[in-house]
Length: 192
Image 1 (tube, rainbow, N blue to C red):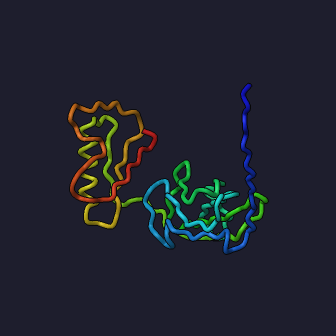
Image 2: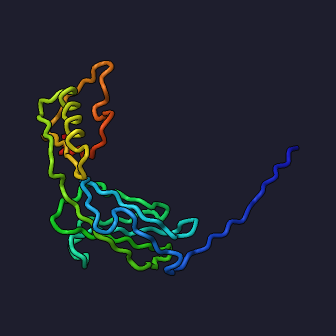
Image 3: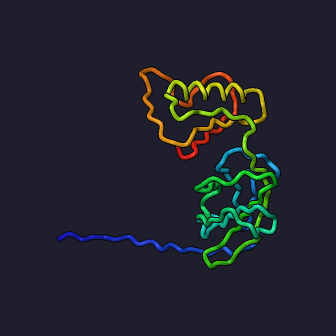
């Protein structure tokens, strides 16, 4: 006859109160007043929420400082310290505002942390026509990268809306691969 032995361990979970020292966060990216060119901005913060990260973060992006004109909002697990919206945000001539709030598992919310950034479209563009093949797109990317090199501005590589049938020739460079000059290139697919 076999005897089975089981070992049980007791795990206790504690809940964190929403005090500033435990649940605050420091906004990192975009930094205050930073110009963001990407159509889908990336947000980062340093969390001071203690392990095991119970609760969630609320994030809101608005066109006004009172957050009455919400452009995007979401709630994500508190284990994350970064976020990108699922879709593009509109470019704006005035600052956009973002804020982040920790909410514990009991539903208690910490104070909002807020920041502003400028969401502006690149002023330089290289357009790709619908009939472009692999070589033409790669050449346009190199031209955009060269145009952006040595400047602080990004260059948008803008595809005409539609369907592209691309075939990579053996040994050809990857579509968006280049060596040498550094430059900020933003690829705008426009549903292509």
